[in-house]
Image (cartoon, rainbow, N blue to C red; front, side):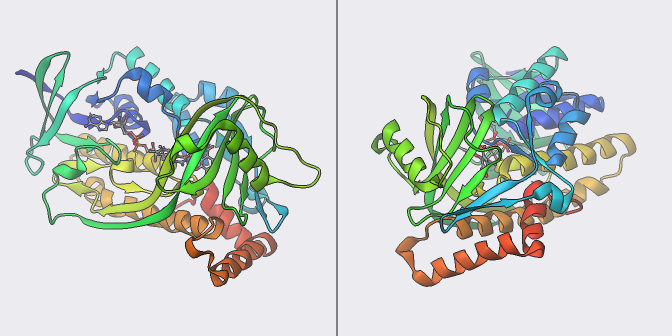
Length: 392
Ligand code: FAD
Ligand code: DHB
């Protein structure tokens, strides 16, 4: 057994783990990041693409925004389409803030390059990761890497290992309260070599279900279709995907541009939160602690917000010996988590075709959609949540 020592052991090299590693490095705090997948895998796992201003600001502060500043696309609004009409929601006008379109894969690539350039430890393809002695002053992580067994002694462990990781399940039974909601639908997402057909994102409510038009660059579009929770991707040849996207986004005088589909996948939707986001010296961050349905584009932004707070708390502790921010970490994070859980649930239930096609539900959805597209107060409520609330 090879025995190692660090200050902060970070499990998971997704956006949360890598951003935390960067924050700590900039403050002179040592960390080791352990990732069970390959570098290639984490750099090409297509997921989120909408960044709140706070996320953009943090990436800038951390010196990893060069490509994002050059190639990221700033949007000042979104479209909501329902009952055959497309309505513009001018988010910047309503809130003073915008969103930036920049793929999670690109954030991850830049953070990996920065960490390796700094010579900071980041191990890919580790196996048998397990966390121990969480309630002690010296929690440990054991793992195998390149055929050898290692033990990493830490002051603190950051569980940034996503929803299927090992950190959350290592917390003894009875400690965590869990809150969850399953939705009877999922999203079929595609990345296509086709210029975006709309200048801003389009969220559509139709009798056939939800659809979303997004993008990754001036030549790559990203689109989503509501499908069943465990939909078989095999039932969706490219022609069927385009036909359905055409149908759900159709508008007179406007055309959806098609192109070769480069990637497709189905994700089931759910909401899940555990409380507290800490046990002893294990701190959970990002998807390891909470999942939101993607309709509000919040998952990645929440993960980054958690680690910003965790980073600040660790900097304070190592700097002054005060555990005040660490002790407040879970409660502070959870305020924003629950705001985003509500917003994501609300957007999801407003925009998706609901099981049973209950006409009462449909009338409520349409009334809500009309409200947010006609009342400035209601539009502002949606917009300020979407661009990211300050001080929550
Ligand atoms: P992750 O990105 O999941 O990173 C966790 C990391 O830990 C991974 O690299 C994983 O390989 C690693 N890991 C897991 N187990 C171990 C272990 N035992 N040891 C070491 N490492 C481990 N959000 C949106 O806003 N819009 C979207 O369109 C969108 N699409 C999504 C599609 C999918 C399929 C999924 C799963 C999520 C999607 N999300 C989306 C949510 C968003 O991508 C996540 O909220 C975000 O990735 C959270 O970052 P994270 O770092 O907390 O977790
Ligand atoms: C994207 C994903 C989302 O969940 C969303 O609400 C908007 C855009 C995207 O991947 O581009």
